[in-house]
Amino acid sequence: MPHIELRALDDDDRDAAFQAVAASTSGWPRAAFDDRAAFDRWAGDVTVDARAIIEDGAVVGVAAALDVDGDREILLAVAPSSHDDTSTEALRLLTAQEPERPLYACVSATDDPSHAVLARIGFVEHERDGDDVVYVLPPTLE
View 1 (cartoon, rainbow, N blue to C red):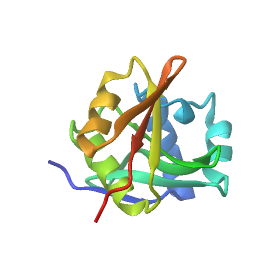
View 2: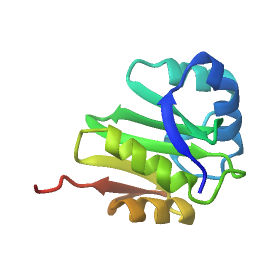
View 3: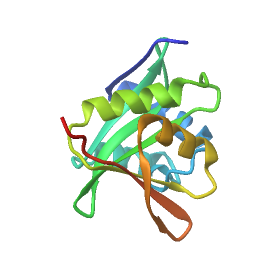
View 4: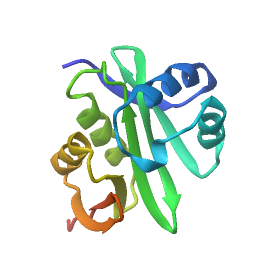
């Protein structure tokens, strides 16, 4: 497996990150951008904690946590050329760095790979919202 890490998304990462998001087949509705300007506005929003997904030193996607209607939600978009385990490892890192629980994720009902990645990390289906499925990572008892 390649070395995967997350780092703050900076200006130098944005070209590669946008290309990865545009190429991604993921159906995460909040990671859909019509153009680079829309991506830059989203990434620069103070309510979005965007991180570059780094695979063996190269930017291959974006992981983010953001507030949506008072809840904390995460999203992930990874280039199709990345390693098969990159999405799972990036999501594991993101959930470990994001302290708020419950933590939500919303994906297209037809995005089977994203459903599998969320399930591997411990997310469970919370509700269906039209063509999307909302998942939750509930708080754990210690």
